[in-house]
Image (cartoon, rainbow, N blue to C red; front, side, top):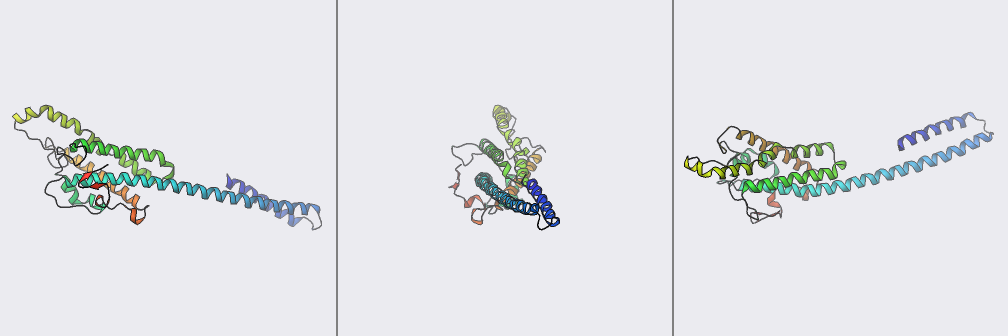
Amino acid sequence: MYKTISLGFSSALILLAFADFLLPSNSWIKDYVRGTFTETVGIIATLLFVNYLFDKNEMNEKEKFKKLFFKHLRSHLVKHLTLLFQMHQSVEETAYKPQKTKDYISEKFLSDLERFDFSKQSPSYPVSFWYQYIVTETNKFRSSLNSLLDRYIIYLDNEMIEMIERLTNSNYYYFLESLPKVFQAYQNNKEHWEKMGIKPSFNFFGDNGLFGTKEIHQQNLELTKHLTDFIYLVELTNNTLSEKNRIQGPQNEPILEKGILHL
């Protein structure tokens, strides 16, 4: 709107200047044209100044809300990163500890998670098994991202919006949501399986899984996709944060104390 008005006033100035050039110097119309020209210049200057202030205030408002968004996003990313860290540390016979965010998509990290046992007790309070706890916390993470996106979407660039939508629509969540039903089915048939000598594996990211089927590789693939998208979102967030506030790893965060996840 302001550009249209400015263009209209600019056209009027050109016409007035042209009229001033053509009119004789002693004409009263020439004095009128010059007065009108001066007033028009004043109006345009005022309009441009108001437009500048409006744009500046709008930009400051946008930056303020973007800072709020990244402040909230950072806390949710740290919680999820801590959850992944605890999943990895629950694996038996591993001394490896990821130090940087990119370590969470390394071959070593993914290889260790193939031995992750969903039937073990999680390091959470109150106490729960991993298959219960991981579902609860990942759903919280997903819900938090959706809420942030709904609240701040008009202040975000397309890349950030697309990345959050991609992460929240991951098939990884659908796999996790099936876990309680799988374990319930196991409990219902546990006695029967024991009589048949069947000892199921709960390393769903490994080669065997519950029934030793090839479908387990699809679950491993979904985990890899989820981790890749998640770490990319962490890096996008770090690019907007000051160096001291960047996400490095849960071991540098106060959220993790004595091996227990305090969320």
